[in-house]
Amino acid sequence: MIEKIWFENSPLKYLLWPLLWPLSQLFAVISQARRCQYQGGSKPTYRAPVPVVVVGNITAGGNGKTPVVIWLVEQLQQLGYRPGVVSRGYGAKAPSYPLTVSQDTLTKHCGDEPKLIHKRTSAPVAVSPQRSDAVKALLPLGVDIIITDDGLQHYALERDVEIVVVDGARRFGNQSLLPLGPLRESVQRLLEVDLVITNGGQAEDGELAMTLAPTQAVNMVTGQQVDVTELDEGLVAMAGIGHPPRFFNTLEQLGADLKYTQGFADHKDFEPLQLEALAAKGKHLIMTEKDAVKCTNYAKDNWWYLPVTAQFSQLDQTRILNKIKEVKEKYGSPSA
Image (cartoon, rainbow, N blue to C red; front, side, top):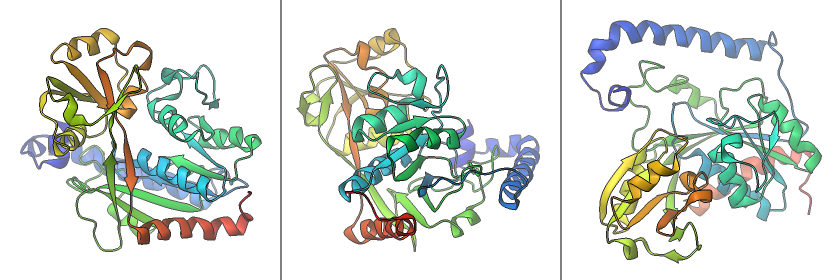
């Protein structure tokens, strides 16, 4: 229902307007006052001794931030930097914070996105509701630049570069603040950030166009890689991400013949029996890579995931990296 009100201009919004509009106005006042307190110095902030790059958004829900973080980390590693990543670890509960992610860290302790980032990049990743604590946990590991996965509104952590990722298909919905609409901050906030990346759809003037390029499907038990079209017979697809239809559309664009699809809430913690019952609806079960990191320990040999990689034009790629290089030069040159 909320998705329909936010993004589909559903008539339901008129029924709920008397309740949601006042709450939206209250949210605007509280969030703006909170930001002013940090910027004005009445609330303490933390300035790291290395550059901090925020990859966030102004809307609730997923829109492609994590692929951007992974791409950015890999690019910086190739340039000789030692990036580390901090995250809140949404949807997870660690025994204690800050938590430094390792190959053995349980996803329920660190969250699916931090686990995926560490798995794909091998970069140091730390999780904490207080991102400054996560930064401090990474500094002894020799990182020389910090990337935050989300956290645009976490003003307790000072930042050098702000990158906002926009869902190119859904944009900003009805352009209202929570809970009437999907916005965490007004669209005017985009005028203050350094870069705006548009994931799919049509990038507007000044925005950097990004696409998510899928690779081959990967078997979750054997690691075998095949084209999605080879799994056509009885293919069941599932996705626990911010906008599941995006994943299903990707599969169809690759030529997959989907027998059944099932969307779940973002960051959902799956039960083995739940997924086994879903897989029984077809011959193969395919999911996102973010979902797969939560299911590795009980995966079956007919379960697959589809990795995706962020892609930019050479011009936009240069623009992103040059912005970070400019900031990094103020802190010192990269280590070899």
